[in-house]
Image 1 (cartoon, rainbow, N blue to C red):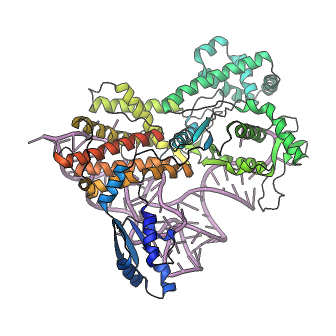
Image 2 (cartoon, chains in turn orange, yellow; image 1 turned 90 degrees about the vertical axis):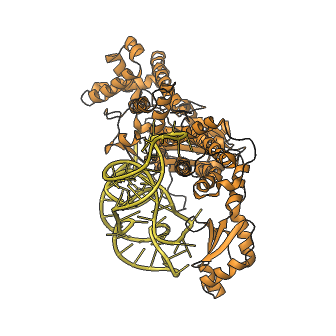
Image 3 (cartoon, helix red, strand yellow; image 1 turned 45 degrees about the vertical axis):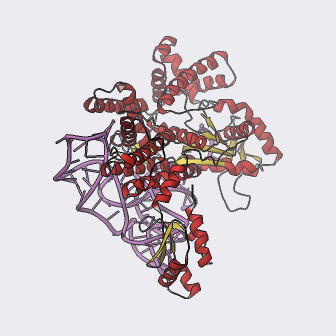
Length: 555
RNA sequence: GCGCCCGUAGCUCAGCUGGAUAGAGCAGCGCCCUUCUAAGGCGUUGGUCGAAGGUUCAAAUCCCUCCGGGCGUGCCA
């Protein structure tokens, strides 16, 4: 791949020595790259227009046109050269992260709670980053940090003993657990004895009581089994399912280290680490390690988990894909590690995302205010099914395609916007199949496959690059040319939407090309256009996989 | 009170390491299938970039102050 920016920079520097590389900017309105000459005006004591004009005739560049306009030095890359460059490089062979290891903590299923729309973001952002990092050559470690520790589970056992049975658990599984959970919280409001009972069961789980642990493990197995079904539908993978409970007995080792560094303080009977006094100006509330009753707290277990991951995987980066409301928690977590003198503290990243609501209401399993993911997916698949029935009734694998398209619509919708903005989940938007959507990209991919199969595949021989220099084809080529950069940028910014948006742009350009230029027109033109179609098809399939979508061949 | 995030077209959002007329999609209106998948393409309507200052040759983009919304702020996770 030719690095036009460096090439242009070198050439301009020879003529205008004070130009810096950052001054060479990409600009698509008037040209491919430009250098604004306004900064130079003061130093050179000439008007920007004159500088640009003189430089335009002095700069020598192969395959790049130079011109001056309104004080800008404009560069236009030779189209045929860029087409050639694009077709001579291979897609997905860019591996800048070879040898790196990245731990990614996402989804974090809570025991006894079915998947609702609030879990979608962490699951899908993390799952996509996992694919992206792997595609760039890194070793990704997908971690599902199970929410399997807390007094709430004592309540669940208590509720199960009062209102449930083994038989019912066998039959209804997670549905029963959710029902019990909601009922427990409701009745605990008026029945104080329930809370005491719950606490005692919670203690029994911790002390290793055989019955309590056995029951809880069953709940856990049911939850994970259910979650794995969802992950399968969403193309999500994990390498580890170690949850919070795994780290409970590893907290004391962390306390030892804290004590050795003289960081552990007792305050009102609780163990804390103070975070406001190290003089670097950043004031934070203290990190609570252990409650006054001796129970470990969230951050203590996260510290233990951080050490475990570092020791086990020797990561170069450790990402936590968790909603923005936990920003302070992670700031504290990373700060404690820094105070403990761990150089890898700076490799920890909170990949935060905005809060999700439905119809302006926050989501709460406890209050039964939920929109289950399975229901949303079913609605989407059903809609895909009916569209297929209407437009392509002879399709052989209808059910399979409807699944890919329906689920794809929901996932793509979740991954299309910048992650920091709060999201008011809209069923209508998630089920939209027109415009900037997953089905649109999948449809364009299927269209490519269809054209290629009619032609018996893309030509093996060398193509005439000049065929692809008209506006419609060239725009498509340009987007393909920088696709690897977009993937890398998505990894660096932890932002899958960079890829989903790029896919839509490629589709828009290709569909314009498809309508403007006839592909099956015979001769050298047909060969070149088929080659472009094959490139688009491959890029879309690759890109779709990075944002967790299938690429059906027909739909 | 303090801290973090967000505020761009009726709706959902790109653009934010400053650059040349602020871009898409949805919704609305009007076109294009006897030629490769119309889940598509083309055209059109729609904007004091929350407000006021400041820095700069140049601000949606950087800085300050306000306003509006979300989240958090010691014994939940």
